[in-house]
Image 1 (cartoon, rainbow, N blue to C red):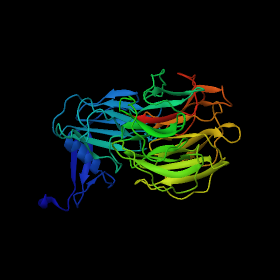
Image 2 (image 1 turned 180 degrees about the vertical axis):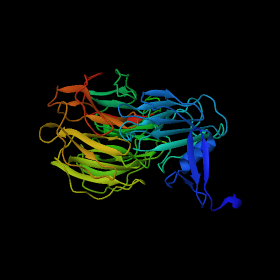
Image 3 (image 1 turned 90 degrees about the vertical axis):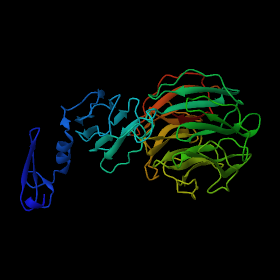
Length: 439
């Protein structure tokens, strides 16, 4: 190339024209940068017609404009591939933030993870170029507009468990990756009400604490297939009505609760499901609060009962450190639920303000709680919530009033934080339940 520095060369191929500038930069006819187009030509990429379907199968050597204006698109990669095989996907309508693309690696690895992980891209205007390496690492994104490309668990399921029907129970109900609640599964472990639950290890869950005929600290692990294990001997202060959430992407934390008085201690859960001894409490002691993850690796405790309804929150860092009280936003209440949605945000919903409520409060991906959103669905208290499908949530069960008013309906939460109307209840109506996700 040294013999042609200072000149411009037209490069033709597949009906495209690019120009090589004096500094080696690829230019359009107007002089704008066109390095991506030059790379496509070099790789022999053949761009296809705009894809608007909800499913498609990709072929090596092709580029795809994916238009998700109306629906998510699930893309199945080739069942076999060779070193250097290349595929490009681009957000045609800048709508991947609303309706994402989901990539099924079809038996091959993706960035070293097997195809039990489903890759999801959720950023408006994103373009993703993947190249196949080998059987070990499989498909590797070599360009994705500087967006994190770690596989996410879009096949995420949920589980509601334990509670009281008038007497304590250990039954559970699984939630599918599309938000459908299953029928009762026979209880495993000690029947109790008012436990808490969270995810750990990126794909498993844990129920902990609660009330049997006394306060308890025992726990029950949930496998990545949704199977609840027998009791694990309790660690930390026995109590009921704590809250729990994931933090650090693979660990969990139980916090606050009631032991004849409101408390604020917490107990960390390792990425293998081991509950640690008490960590000295931070913030106002209370029970009947809720917690959820936000920002992909942090958590937030909020609301509850300090002797009267409360609205303050406490952030949890990505190493499990609970922060001091943040002044409450929205209507103070107790006996509510919370879950993550949208991959990095959270929502508090329902609860008891002195009477049952259905209002909600969104949590941003920086942990800021928003003002009240008008309630949707049946007002109730002592319900539970969890994430499902990788970016959506579900509220379920609870009580609409005094004893004998237990319900089993659920309300789905979209990936933009919108709560839907009631879905007819499935399983045994009960309150003081807990819920978490698993994969």
